[in-house]
Length: 115
Image (tube, rainbow, N blue to C red):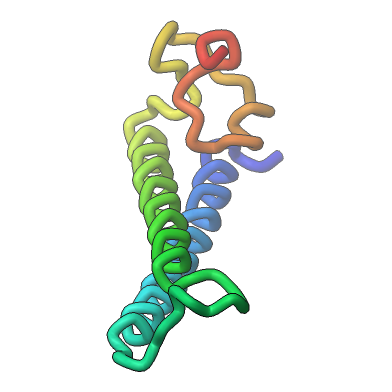
């Protein structure tokens, strides 16, 4: 039977890797948009064919912010694993159900307290 702590660690590290990869991709995308925005000939505000560079910038920034937040939540969950606090509700001290932790491995509250 697999160790639940090691299973949680593997799941969190996999998700951390995915989030870091997305953050890197968004940084590259933002660099491309920044270069396009700096192009004096780019008149995207009057282009009827698609979103503006400003709109794309806002979208990519929001995706980057979400990936950064996810990384912080994962790092906090990994720290809880190290201290033995992982899977314990920060509000009531009850055990967080395994199913909830599989679905949301960064959960800090049990179902009752999260509701």
